[in-house]
Length: 105
Image 1 (cartoon, rainbow, N blue to C red):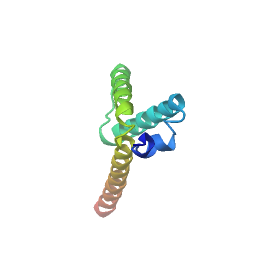
Image 2: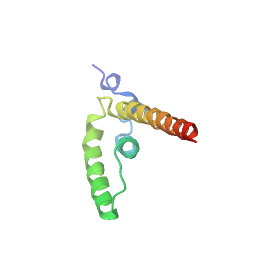
Image 3: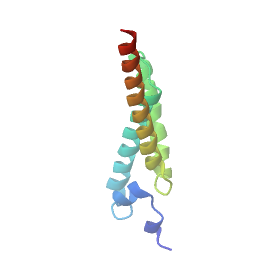
Image 4: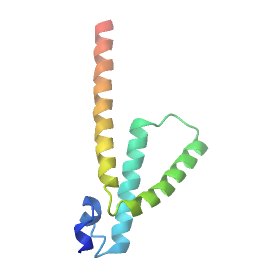
C-alpha cells in the first residue's frame, strides 16, 4: 500500500513524503495560521499582552501535535472549514447590526 495515497490534501500539496523537512514546516505554519485565524474569529477577546503571549505559546505547542496528526487526518481542512463558517458568521453579524442601526435611526 502506497502511503502517499493516504495523505490528506495539505500534506500531499506540500509533498511531505518527498521533502519531509520543508513539507512539515509548511504544514505546521498552515495549521498555526489557520488556528490563529479561527481563534481570532471565534474566541479572542481583548487580553493583556502577557496573557496573549501565554495563549499563543500554548496554541503553537498544540499545533505541533496537530501537525503530526494532520499528515493523515484532515486537520488543516477542518480548520479551513471552521474559518469559513466563522467568516460568514461575522459578515452576517455585521450586516445584521448595520441593518438594526439603520432601522433605529
